[in-house]
Image 1 (tube, rainbow, N blue to C red):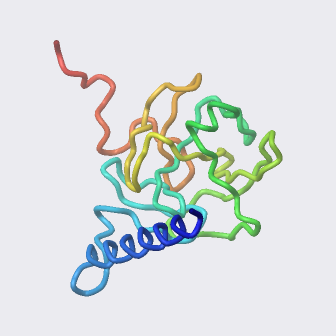
Image 2 (cartoon, rainbow, N blue to C red; image 1 turned 135 degrees about the vertical axis):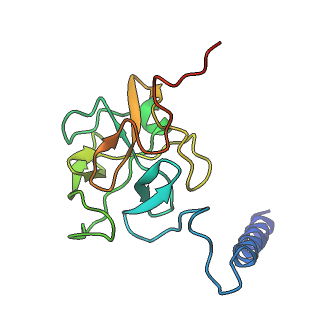
Length: 171
């Protein structure tokens, strides 16, 4: 049974590689405007429909939690299942392209290192099923409001391209 699973996983991985190759343009590059690319860095700045925001090394949108008023995370347990912390790398780079906020790390209650940008612990959202999605923007979940993070590390409560809180449709 284990051998069958390994062969199936190899087939899935091969199919995924073929699909990603097929999605590349004729010059061999993918379209970064549609799907942010993984950089291998802890975070990078990427253009989205909400303006330029931070994404993790897999292209997933990075969020800040309004309840984190210091560099310590207050999102644990079920909250951390909804909002996985962005892990801090063993060696923090001095700077990353497009990221202007100071990178740092905080130790979570479980002892794991979490990345901070401009003193804010950062997270991804389990409700974003693919790179480039911003489903967590502005929602109140797990006891506080979540917002995307600008390249400077500032939580973006009203990023470019987001509807204004006063622009709700009339019913």
